[in-house]
Length: 169
Image (cartoon, rainbow, N blue to C red; front, side, top):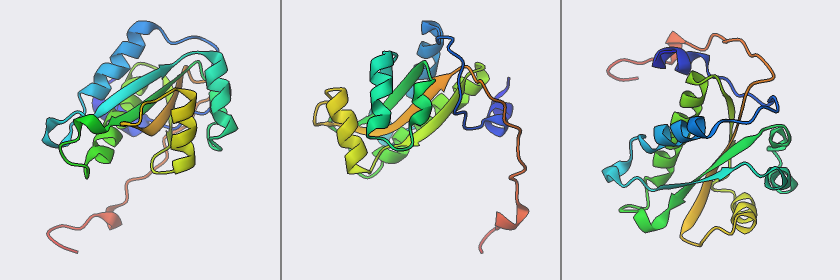
């Protein structure tokens, strides 16, 4: 699958088969994340790979939009590492780019994903910080459920020429 096809056909998948995601595929997802652009090339990210069923099942106790983790064999928690910040302004964009790279790489590899927001919701960040014993300088940013899709979603038409403005409004 080429990059444009992955971009245009990626959908939020919330139901997964029980098939585990192979370690080599997980590594490819994380490699894609680490090739995301970042301001000043600071690469301010850290990742927690979550495969433990008990941990996956605990997250919906405090994250109201994470019920799909009950069927996902894997989740990746994308975090900002404040010890790597050269500027405190851009790390959310950097971590968002890393998150999107994971979503697109997963699609290209035949996996389904859904991006669950975490930052800047203090209760979600604190719940994850406590569950995973995350140090203070690490900031939970996004949570991605990953697995083999147990649902199929069609590509809706989203291109809208009325949203494009050339050389001004």
